[in-house]
View 1 (cartoon, rainbow, N blue to C red):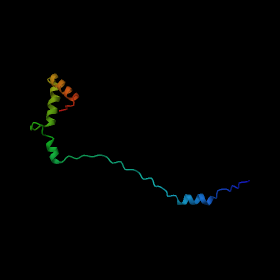
View 2 (view 1 turned 180 degrees about the horizontal axis):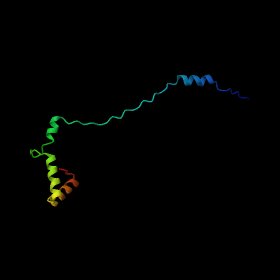
View 3 (view 1 turned 120 degrees about the horizontal axis):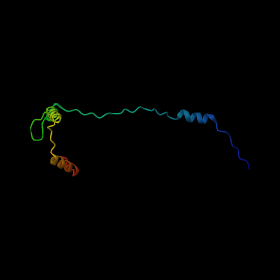
View 4 (view 1 turned 90 degrees about the horizontal axis):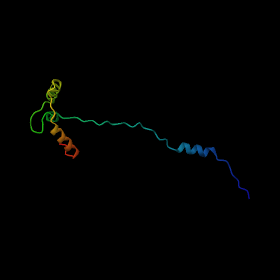
Length: 92
């Protein structure tokens, strides 16, 4: 018994290539997160929790000057308390 094997017809392969849909590669756009504060939010940033108005630029300059003059003192008990509170999860 003999088996007859015929070669593959090229037009069958070409038909497959013609009917296969080509996929287009689209460039993905990377979106960046943005945030905007309203005018009211900006005004609120100048207030502290105690209701006192705080000017952070003035406070920073005062601290810089006291460090420069050698008069800046660090309360070690308060610093330790803040460290422990942060470690316990009581950030504020």
